[in-house]
Image (cartoon, rainbow, N blue to C red):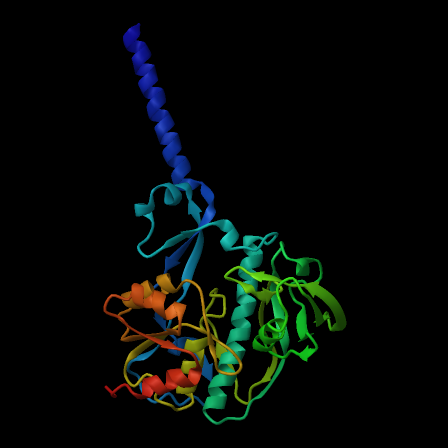
Length: 336
């Protein structure tokens, strides 16, 4: 009788362990994983009217990151995660009240704007006149714990602040910087093409209690008319971080030897003035560039470049602050 009891206890224990294992392997947690993808060439993804790409060697490479729900196993046992991946909490991926599906849709909208701006910047650098009119700072998201949450919403276009005209995100930052944290700020914006003017109270920036912010993330609202047709298709890839490789590939397609025979990988958000903004997932992107055996990796200067160098191994990482700076560096590479 005692032996039979031990047998059933052992069987129950094994069943419990199997159940826990299946739960850990199959059930998603509330966290997410950023997973590296190998960098890939852009040449076949970008088509420019009257394209005259100068050579077939080297190439401009883009790199993206897979964002997926983490399983409980990923959360509990770190060594089962893919090499170079990072576990992040759900609130770092989606804004409060935003679903993951809405997050993906927003990223695809960012990609569409990035393509247009990158093409415009590349053409202007090539001496081609482009009709690009900045129209304000497009609100992408509003933090739920700031006073502006009751006033501004995703999709609003801020066109004025603190009595100043706002045409770009940089101008909005400068305008907000004229007041102290806790001060009221007059904001003019468009919503569904209707004008509004409201007062919002500023708060202190998380990284600098002396700097005022209104708690919104913004992108460039712009009307662009390109003189040449440009088609860019990366499938389901979203977000603005491929702006720099887009601009490099378009510039090369216009007859300029950008890569000089090298595999040039790049990441960075391109602004309408040609400046390069920081992006996320740089650790994973560095792993992805390394796996593609690229010769050089162009990344936004500053913290992004420091992160890339931390995981670069033997990969050459170059931090750039503008599209013009990226072109200047590539010109210094000896032709292969």
